Length: 127
Image 1 (cartoon, rainbow, N blue to C red):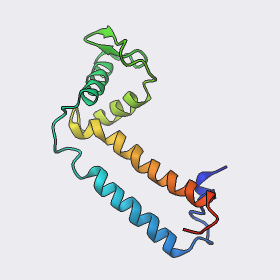
Image 2 (cartoon, one colour):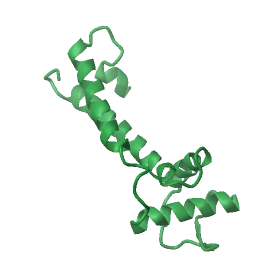
Image 3 (tube, helix red, strand yellow):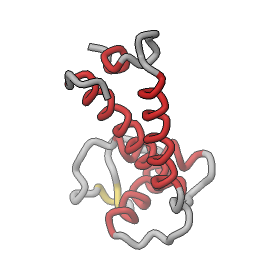
Image 4 (cartoon, rainbow, N blue to C red):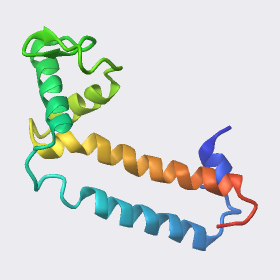
């Protein structure tokens, strides 16, 4: 089932208030997600760990096994998809807090839109 088709997005049957509501929620969400991405320092231990692991991934050219100080990282054993997104983000502005946090903020915004689509398709009430 196509989530966008299930939500009615893009079909002529969708009413204008729904589109305005979606745009408003996404605009408000984007404002709150992106307003301070670059302002603060990286102090949270897991955020800094993800930044270091991604930097080492880019420096070494090894994109499957994560390393910390050149040694395989046994602490963070999970798929490197999130680190790949951070690595792609690092390519444009460099190693900055904005580049480190941007993939998470974008994924959160996509998650809000998907949640709205699922809620609309699952409800009998048109929201």
